[in-house]
Length: 638
Image (cartoon, rainbow, N blue to C red; front, side, top):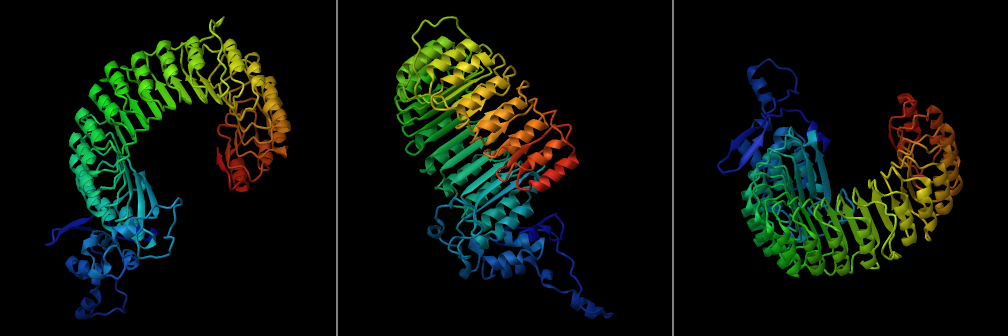
């Protein structure tokens, strides 16, 4: 539809109020072109200047609404911006009798997995919502939206629309109304940072798009409860609602959504200062029979909301609570002890000062099917709560602890000894209380099921702790030790040698004391299974590691050598390894890599899809351009 956007005509629009109480927006009429032979007579000149554009807009409206089909309307929109905006103002109910929109039943078909440009059955007359369109920042304008709306009618219909704007975005209610008028099959609408959209635009969407299923509003300050109520009343198929940083949204809109949308499965409410317990509690209790996912962040809600979630959340499987400063220990205790979260599988709690050991134990008691627990910035949790949780959560498979500084290594080991024997993943991130211990007073647990271990930015964890990990976790496949500056070759050797199944992903980024000796041992022990190796910032890594990788690794497809001390020789050795089929390679900040490496990089093969040579000061832009021509299929960052 580029022709629709690039046609001549001013951007300024005029507003014409017709007797039918329909606002029509259009640019000033274009001056008629004189294409006949030049004449001198005034009467003849006047005759030549006449065109269809000289008709009043009421007449043009009547003509255009009688066009025989979507394709004809789309072609007519190419004539001028005037016609484009006039066509986009025509509602489905105003089309001539022979051109009524398809029924809801004919449009109610599932979206295909792939974004197609035409319906599967090849019928242009049915607007089934097969197409997805995204507009970012400056390209998001009313003219563009009108072009998309009319242009997709004859090619499957618009099903998903994502607008990612900015403060300068020129999208207004005019563009959104064009979508509402021409795209009755729209099922997904996402509006981010479009400050000029008001309730009027959302009212048009509610009237024109009854099949809407997902609505996402972020930083839309002029949208109020009035717009949400209209969506609730007209779009009963709504299954997902996300509202973030919308300062004019209060409780009434959420209450209406709960009452009128029986299929609602997911709600996300973030940073809305006027939303309180009244709105969230009413929404959760009204939609309790279908609601499966709840995400709440930075809201003025209290223990009442958590009690309602605990009581009515019988179908909730995913719960995320972030920065709820008015929720106390009592709220978490009641939420767990009401025993309503029987189907809960995943819970994430971040920066909630009311979460204590007592509340954590109650959550595990009330959620017998809980598989994943993510705790972040919980300053009042201790080993006592972690151990009590582990004793009760018998289905737990994934445990993530981040910025929880009262947990100790003894507490973690005790929890592991009491935890579900099928635990698969453990992550400890910036937990300053976890430190090496000289002796272990408890019997070491056997974590035979643990496949993934992350210990990131925990400065107290060094050689002794990693030796313990090697003893208790012989089935590890994914290891992430990024940011562990105290880790050395000697502390990692027991961990490398302990695995019985072979590492698949290893992240040692920021481990500045790791050397070629450790990498050589790693690839010799796990070269047949290793797929991802990250050595970002390991300055002691040289060409010796690349020699070992080239000789041993057979399935490696992602290698990060950013900031390492490798040279052109190492790159040449890596490129000459016939068994390697790298897809991603990063040499960013490798100061010893020069333009001599580029011919070898060019021979890496068709498997390469990503190459990072950013901040390689000895490689010129000209040489990079030649490499891009040779590896035209590869995304090169320079």
